[in-house]
Amino acid sequence: MEHSLPGIHSPWRTATLVAAGVALLELVLLIVLAVALLADPVSQQIRKAAEAKAFAPVVAKPKKPVPAARPKLSRPETSVIVLNGNGRTGAAAAGADRVRSFGYTIGTVGNAPRRDVTRTIVMYRKGYRPEAIRLAADLKVKIVGPLDGLTPRDMLGAHVALVIGD
Image 1 (spheres, rainbow, N blue to C red):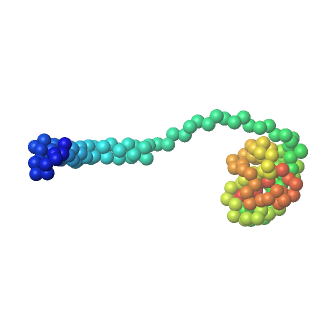
Image 2: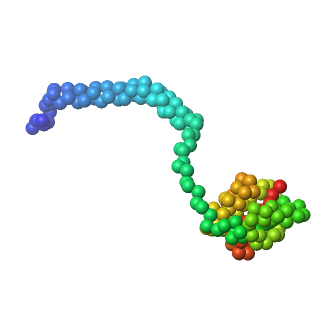
Image 3: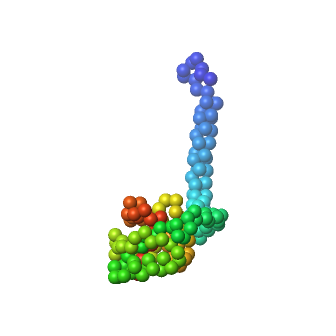
């Protein structure tokens, strides 16, 4: 409390200011000490946890098997275009003979847009995946996918394409 007389200082005011200064100094020292003692162990724990997470093996979640859709078209109703993707003369014709031996209808035989296809591929137009999977199983072809590098127009009405690779 301020005195009305300016020349008189209260000893309590000075003692309060000194005590507050000492408390502030103690608080700063405690914070510095806590940071010095805890920062290194905490940062090591964070680093270890981050490394464990970063280098942990990725565990794939098991996917529920999707029941395979049944083909809508029979083999004779399924039209297949056979394309030579490896550049060897007669590869598409030989592939067409093999496809025909399983009962499929051959739409056309020709050359693929690319001649450097390394693996034989079965591709399908939208809605004909089950037919493509069945053809791939019949021919023991491992790669089945949607049209890639071919347009539905390139299919000339065929449902499935067989691109012969090396």
